[in-house]
Amino acid sequence: MSIEAGTPTSSTEPNAEGYRGFTLGQFSFRRDEYFAYISWPTGSHIMSVDAFLRAMQRDIAWDFFYGIVNFDGVFGTMNHYGTVDLFAGRYNDSYRKAELDYSENIDTPIIREQFKAILEDWTNQTFDPFASPHETGPAFGVKNGSNVDAITRRRVAATRMVNLPGDEELRNDENGHPLNRMFLDVPQDEPLVEAEPGFEGQLAGFNLFNYLARSQVTWNPSVVSVCKDSLFCPTTEEYILPIIHGNDRVEWFIQLSDEISWEVEDRDTGTMRSRVVMKAGDVCAMPADIRHQGYSPKRSMLLVWENGDPNLADLIASGQAPTYPADF
Amino acid sequence: MAGATNASGAVEAASYKTVFASLEDFSKGGVELINDDPRHYAFSNMYEVASISKPWEQVAVGKNMQYVLEVVRAEGQSGWRTASHDQFAVSLDGEVEIEFFTHGAPVDESVEGSVALAADPDGQRMGRVVLNFGHQALLPANSAYRMTASRPSVVMIQTIAGADTKFRWAEICQTV
Ligand SMILES: [Fe+2]
Image (cartoon, rainbow over all chains, first blue to last red; front, side, top):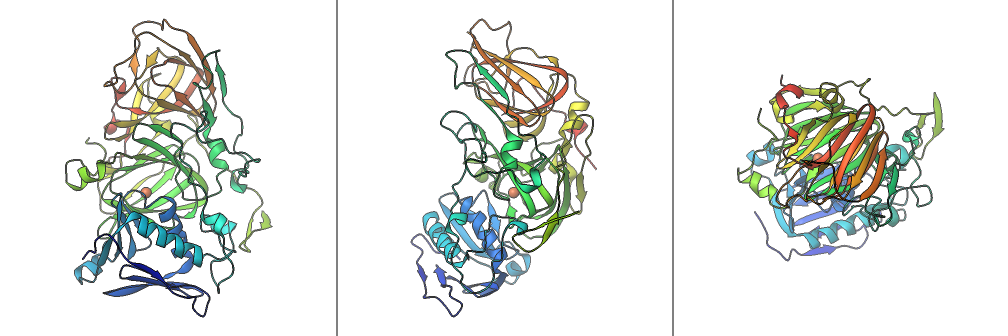
């Protein structure tokens, strides 16, 4: 079932706990001290509000990312790059078999704005949804201020490479990026760049590991270098990826430091396919028909490598391109 | 050892050690299969690949359609190369000097990946970049570049599959 563009949205006055309720098409959202409640014409769902806000934060920051952002095994979004499916039970075998799954296709600006409104109203001043659990206070309780600066961090995306003139700048203490407490031992030297007269600004380099050691956020890939549609999107990871990411293309992980364990499930049904343990130097493809969630016991550096070709999702969905990277 | 109490009220360790790897010291994770084929994951380790490669071989450890991630064992001096598009190099172990020149033999835009130059570049010296562990450099489109490493080092390259790219999936990837 699908409702076309022009999806109506609304919000209510604050409830007894101080939080507004919201609607997005026929989905409705409310929260209390501990939980987010989601309902739709064929069912309803409950999530811990801290997990809900961490997932919502990623979905907004990534502008619905590639493929599916599952908030959990029931609720999430699928990106169609211009529109987004908001779904419940769509990628859950039991909901599908019971024909209780439901989704609405919504113009991206409409879902984006309503998601931002929910995140802003439901995030208290004590909570930073981008932070690891060690770095933030609780999401819980009655309405207690807001944390707009934390939830509206600028999206970092180099157009060519970090540290080229006019592109994303290096991170340092002065611009609000101190070394993370778990990366104090990461070398901070920068590469030697010597350009001959007339070639200034044409050669460039930067210390990628120092740059990552100064990231303020977790589980938030951001582009550092661009080779046509090939995007290096490294990120620092600690605790659990707050979403279960369903691919619409092959995605590659390159573990740069420490260790992450991944649970890999079938994208459409959620049945387990594998566990992947990645250590420094390991490289692993995530096939286009899986979903995955990562666990990082210590803050680690992960290079997520994406192919941003706008035609790729359709090629794979229509069977013209394979769901895995290579035949051998 | 116990350290400070953090924002959440939990007590953290007094210090943390970041685990990196090197050509001399790496350990590999892997895919624990439940219901899948390991080949779908093309799981490898870049240090292991570099440890079994000849100097300057560009071995694909990742491929997404035409795009590749290559691992290079940098040892001694490479030949001169160029490409019609930007590429990027990251040192994952060791010091690697990259020299850049202009040259009069540009590669056609339709040719992707790195291309060996038939002779030393005939243009102007643009400069050099010296990468150490964890450093990334731009290899600008149409420049000629050459790498030098005094000891065996490891470089990862973000590029597009081309004449130089070696595909050895069966040798480098987990298959069972
Ligand atoms: Fe992912």
